[in-house]
Length: 147
Image 1 (cartoon, one colour):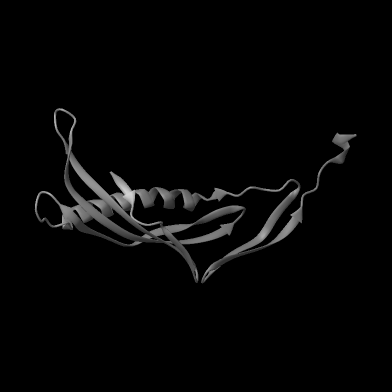
Image 2 (spheres, one colour):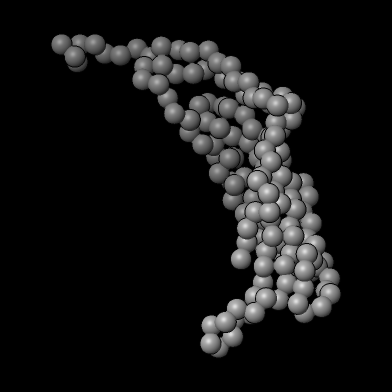
């Protein structure tokens, strides 16, 4: 069972957005009769940084795992080291973030307004806020088709 210990913290810093997540994972064994027997609980703390930009009407960028730590919060099976579990979680996070980076590398098409296209768009992240500025270009339409 995986659940958030606290609400994720999302903040804007100069040039990047940072997501901090604190989750817990409870491991149980299931007996033949369906009874769940608690084994241990791990606390997982992580920070992910993203750098984003807008180019050609698409949101583009990258995300990276800054830090992830696993600690044993409680155990019914005695003490154990989390080093190998932490490596597995880092590999899993790396694979997941790789997919996100592939999508952001191609870009996510942003919604357009009818007959208006945003050009020269700049996305700038600063401490506590995001500023988006852009020029607008009116698209010519063939009005004869309406007559």
